[in-house]
Amino acid sequence: MIGQQRIALFIDGANLYATTKALGFDIDYKRLLKEFQTRGYLVRAFYYTALVEDQEYSSIRPLVDWLDYNGYRVVTKPTKEFTDSSGRRRVKGNMDIELAIDALELAPHIDHMVLFSGDGDFRSLVEAMQRRGVRVSVVSTVTSQPPMVADELRRQADEFIDLAHLIQKIGRDPSERPQRPSGDAGDRSRAPSPGLERRYGIRQPQEDDGVVET
Figure 1: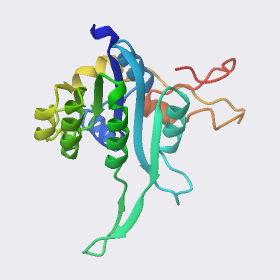
Figure 2: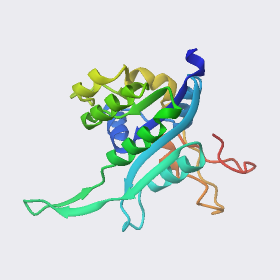
Figure 3: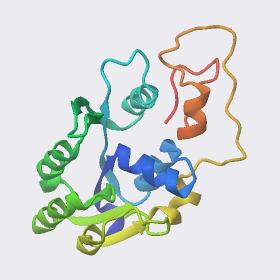
Figure 4: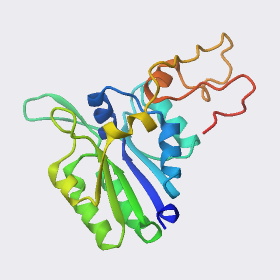
């Protein structure tokens, strides 16, 4: 039965952020998790992103910390800096290998892989998962200009889910306003910033909350 399928989410963080930016909406990560929990038994929800180690403050760090405590398995690694042939400083932070290894290791334990990425480099991974009997859905969009999903990845997937069609289910309501932080500094490590709320749909905990609810 479709309701009993074992599902795992694999989120290419940088790619998903670029896709939502192209579509002009923000993801509410609580709603995203709940949406796929209604589609079957959610075994894992992975989120992959590279982090700049030397930065005193990274805008992605609060999101990573929140996800780690609220139902997601966060996988990170430090970015690498290099100078290209024109002498420009570049930062590299590709997480494809980490995502592929986790997916292949989990393949015997899941029925359905949901890949949030439009990167064509994942076509071979999708094919390998299918050979192991896993159904693969790719979540990206073709409604932006240019489309955010590679044609070869879309063709290989068992199902393509346009992220634009999920906005009503996992998007943050633009009419909502983030709660302003109280004057008490408190434990700042638990409380996401207002900017994080606006971008990712993460709510500040109420004064009587022990933790941020999922």
